[in-house]
Image 1: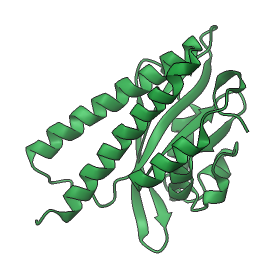
Image 2: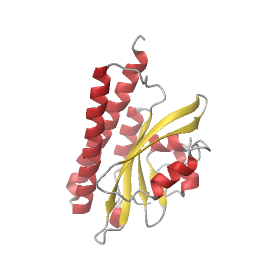
Image 3: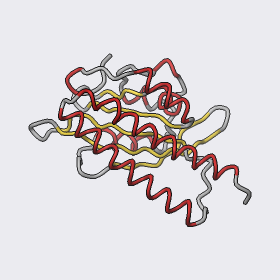
Image 4: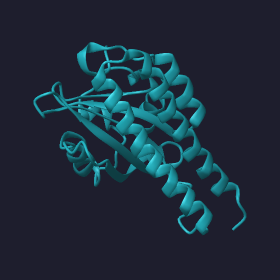
Length: 196
């Protein structure tokens, strides 16, 4: 199992550790050439409900096992059709969650093109946003916008570093993405606990 262009291995333990600490968040990577989705442990739990499927190249059907039937075609098209490297792809959809019922998920990713301009990989984050209160005050909205922008720039930086082949920058770029994911998850937890 390899993640990333050129068969480069990513540090699995870093991904697993930080995605589990974030709670309700994870990283994913879509390989356009092999039409396979690779999930970290957090993303595997959200999208498939099975942590054993983490770090394997999965066909879409297996990787999106918990996606709501009404949203499956939309999510599949978003992933397989993600070809716009300059703009982040964004999707909100539902998954079947046990024992918590239907969960709302936010997925964001950015596509990296190869030297010929052909989509190579799309990497992104998946976050369970079910418990986020959509009627939060302006502070949360402004912070969410800032974190969203940070996520876009972080994904762009990661893809640029990956394309450059500078392996010493890969771990810090991944760490940045995971820290942004943690902040988003922490904000959602704060929203849940705030009195309404």
